[in-house]
Length: 471
Ligand code: ARG
View (tube, rainbow, N blue to C red):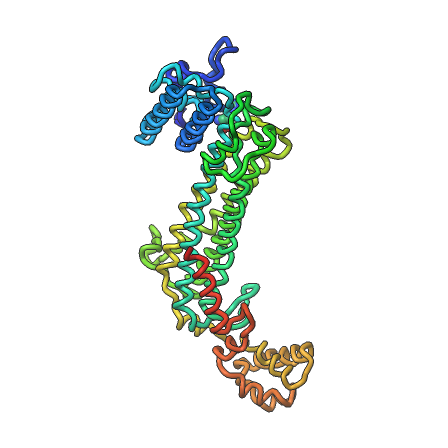
């Protein structure tokens, strides 16, 4: 067979070190090992595994399970194992998982005293401790990238405060807006993403270590001390819950997916705006891609892929919730799947965000194209508002303006060029209103409420966003 996916399960190297072989007459079948082993996925937890194990050694020592020499030997041994793994050692290892691998290497480094490391501990509390530590780093990495993308949008906005373009709803021209306003509209969701990432930290940073397999540890370790050693904020309160709880993974996946969804919407909009027909933005060479057949193409692959990645992370989220549903409390092997899904979603975003940020930072808005897309009908709401100002109830003003738009369409002229003989028929005040309608700038400036399109409002938004994304 040619589907060579880690096909070589060499029983020999891990045969010598198995965590649970005692009660079985033979080693697991190769087919079982191929399904069950998770080292190719969880190998990347090695750093967290060593950190957690070192803290566990300290706690065992403080609980008088290890004497000072044993503690030192194990600490130094774990450091050496870490060095070997950092240097890319054991790349072909066929151990069951990262926990087994680290323990086997520890035996190589320190001999039999390695056998004391796992006292009072289970892989059930160990793996979820490692994963929570990993998540805390992942949150930081994501947060940094989200802030950088947010800042790129703010910078585009700063340059685009005076560029006007049609604002769209339902894909139809609705009212004029500023380019900065559109950029800010995509930055606000990222602000919420950062807030969300910050909020889940409190639920991720809960220490499960010391839970044993499900019933608590038989060794009287000081869990508060472990919490402090590993930088967690609280300790779990029920070992059966703590070993089977993957809510934090689901929350990470939701946060990643909503983030991906926001980036997808930004991408989708920029695919449209970079098209030949719109031409509102031009991608830089470094962030455009070409076609193998069509020499003229300048493709926005970066935004198309950003658009697609949200489906992938959504798949990860749905698969995780699907895995969790129906499981009894405590650890079930189903939960081993958590890492594949979590790593995929986080990796996906850590590849996507820098590329989108680069593309946003280097794209060039084309204000002439934006302006030439502005149609007079974008001022229809302003006409209705002016009719309101001369005392007409809005509902009626809306109807009168609708008739004006219909008239303009029938005559094939812009709103303001409908002859006054016609507009007078609709309402006697209309000729003056159309006369004094002013520019598209006047229209955006008329929207001065917080969150509106006026320059002052947009600049206040950019200030707030910049402040938020710069720390
Ligand atoms: N590789 C396992 C996982 O990722 C570690 C925990 C195994 N626990 C067990 N009882 N077999 O979930």
